[in-house]
Image 1 (cartoon, rainbow, N blue to C red):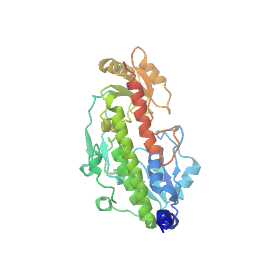
Image 2 (cartoon, rainbow, N blue to C red):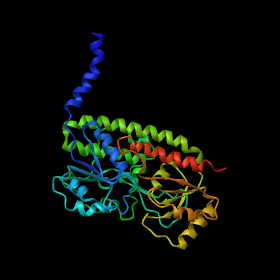
Image 3 (cartoon, rainbow, N blue to C red):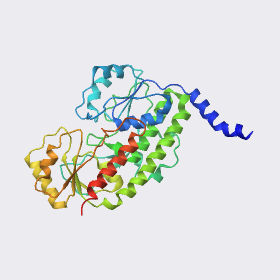
Image 4 (tube, one colour):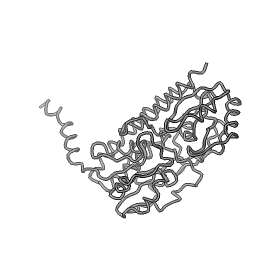
Length: 343
């Protein structure tokens, strides 16, 4: 009898997995979002990733095979119309059965405005949030229930990519996955959207989402502790992609060489960055592995700052459900390694 009781949890788990339908035709644009989607799907299916390896979503061009994949998909999960510009033309030609899910439109996110200029004041974190949410404190997330009651967006059948305004302004910063609080809201949105098409998998998706959220929260607490000693050390980044991470962990980013990676900065910008380094005592300038480090080396000339590496996408990481947590841990480790070496 005792052996039988011990075997019950395994029997229920096997039964649950056997009753789950295969989650098919899921396409995701960038690796961090792919990780969150795959984490919710779990063993029910495999999501296809568009931007992989050391390619950047900035200036990316779809391959013909990827266009065909989009046409036959059931879901396309993406950040927003103003982020994956390479996707917009294909979104306009998707068949009606394809559900194109924009995180900027669907998820209840804290959204920051783009910062102007290559230098900004430390801790200048003017923000606006959907529904007045503030994700700095994870206790405000409450329990990880299904948020169907809070969905203020219309449940459009088929794709919703014609909603160009997405509830945000053209000046919003779309790197919002780098806030763990926003990532949790994205997990909830993915769970709800998948459950609409595969209601028989709803419990599986919710259990997977709960486990993923717990992993994100555990990583968040670890990172808060690790970065405590370097919060007030100023630094400069390659392009302005990290303000969500900076705000969440109260870090002291003071400037970026570029606002967007496809910019071509002039001498005046580099002089401005050097002046910012000398003015603030910036300890590090962080390059990104997807781009040449020539600009970073040029900006470092004649200063005491050191070079480090930050990557908002996780180009060198294996895609999959654990990638998002690994990404934010890597960002924290790289920040601490460079900023903490200042003596």
